[in-house]
Image (cartoon, rainbow, N blue to C red; front, side, top):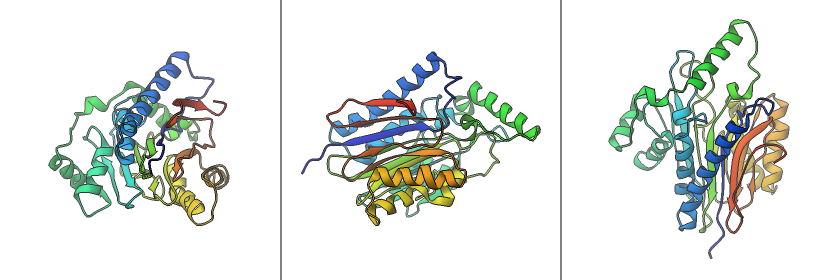
Length: 311
C-alpha cells in the first residue's frame, strides 16, 4: 500500500529574538528553510526513501551559513569548529554518528557512512576523518566554515562569561539543524547536525550524536530530531522518551512530544524543541523557547515554514 509522505525540518531553536529580527534576515531564513523542505520533498515525491530525504534536507541546511551546522557552525573557546551529526533508519534501527569533527563539508553524510560502512554507531576524531576520506566525501578548508557573525557571537559569549554573566540568548546557547521523514513505504528516518554551543569547551559533545537523545527513529512509533540545550536533552533522553510514550504508553505523537518538551524539559530548566513524524504521517514541532526555525510538508498539502509561536 502506498502512503502519503511527510517531512519536517528545523534550523535550530536558537532563533534571533523577535525584537531583533529584521525583515531582511527573516526573509533569508525562511527562504533557506523552504529550500531545505523542497530538497527533501523532491526525494520523497520521486518515491525515494525517508533516509535519503532527511539527509538531503540536512545537506542544504549544512551548506547554509545562517544555521549552526556545517558551514555556519559556531566557534569553540579555542576559536575552532567541532561538529556533531547523526542519522537513524526507522526500518532497521541502524544508526550512525560522528562527534567533534572538522573538515568534511557535510557531517551528516559522514554519519551515514558510519552507519553503512562500519560495524559501529559513533566515531570521533582521526578515525572519523579517515572514514570520510576512504568514503570519498568532500572536505573544505577552514575559511569555508568561517563566518563573521559566528565570530562576533563568540566574542559576545566570552565577554559575558568574563563579567560573570549567564548566557541567556538562545542564539548563543544552542542551534542545530535536522530533518525527519516518512516515505510512501511507511519507513521513518531522522538526521541531525550541529556545530554545538557558542564558546563551548573543545571536546564537548551534545545530544545530536547521542542516539535516543537528539536523534531517533523507529517505524513502530516515530522519528525525532532535537535542538536545544544538549546537556538537558541527554539527561532526559528526549527523543527516545517521545518514542516510548508513543510506542509503549499509547500517546499520540503530539501528546508525547509536547509532554516531554513543554513539561519535562522545562522542569529541569532546559530550552529547545523537536520535530517529529509518526508512523501515520502526523507531524509536530513543539518548542518551549521564543522560536524555532522549522518547516514541514505532507503529501497533497502546501509546504510551510515558520519561526515563532504564532505562525
